[in-house]
Image 1 (tube, rainbow, N blue to C red):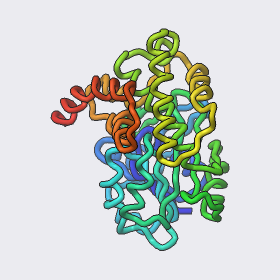
Image 2: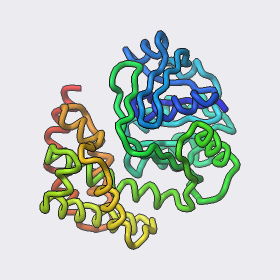
Image 3: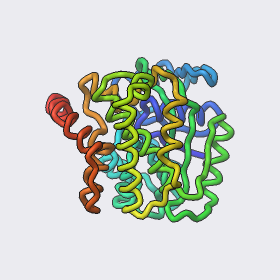
Length: 309
């Protein structure tokens, strides 16, 4: 199976590396010093699940160089998805399947608008990782997990083949019966934790144990559940409780990627996370005061970071 990792950062580097380690034909799309390191020294991954070093990997910044692909994993930042769809359009063939692994809930439809619904699966992943240095991915924690499925919920051979490829690579993978519910449940977690973590500027252990921020976490998640329902997504009745239990189970030092980006003054996924909750809430006439508070507090710094980028 030929797999293109479009956006070889901390997420794409890890999951693509596991697929390459297991023998799949993987191409990594990267740029700058990271690309040069991949081309000269390969990909090194440090992980509690086992370190590995792929000395020779296929890496380029020219997606047309790869030719056709069976699977394209889109692992860019959420705001880069529309541009990425345009960039990969020329190599999407009749049998190519594209899987977005972004935080947020809008990427599948953004890809469908450009590539057509017949090429797009819904997808999500869970992992705490970072690009520690060019060519070097550090898996910090959280059991690496990936899920994908047809957007209409139907079973498909291509989903099964991709599932087997990840399982062969030692990655916990799943085909959920309702991919949209799975995407929104992850969104409930990541938007609340990322946004409040960025405002409070503390790791998750402090965030969840301080009464005020714990209450805000719950309120932000409840709002996301209401917006999901208005969007026609059926979440389990205990989604907020289970998400809070997940938050309580994570290592105290855990931080989210959006939180780190904002704290370090980089452009972030604010618009795709808390901003999306606010926009979709307004669309359906649903008040989202907790997410509005998060968004309004972080927006000035976001605008500053984007102006400087």
